[in-house]
Image (cartoon, rainbow, N blue to C red; front, side, top):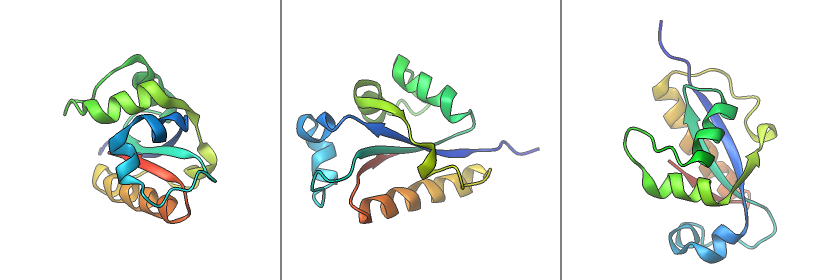
Length: 114
């Protein structure tokens, strides 16, 4: 049976925009009206994955940049932005993760994903 993946969204402190150059450069359209967000995908529950982010856990790829942004600036999960996205295969989750991140960015959020 294939592993089920979930896409999730974490709200970040707006300090990430002023303090993190790479985040700022990735979001030149940001105008401070909406929030800063992180979009990810996981085989765990969003709550378990958020706890891992906050504890400093790095995934198998060791994506330090993503891990540090969420550890330092992550505030809480935003289920209203992902609750309608059903269980997915890993491949589907990777596509949906990027698609959701780009959609949120187009709506005016500052978004990091990975």
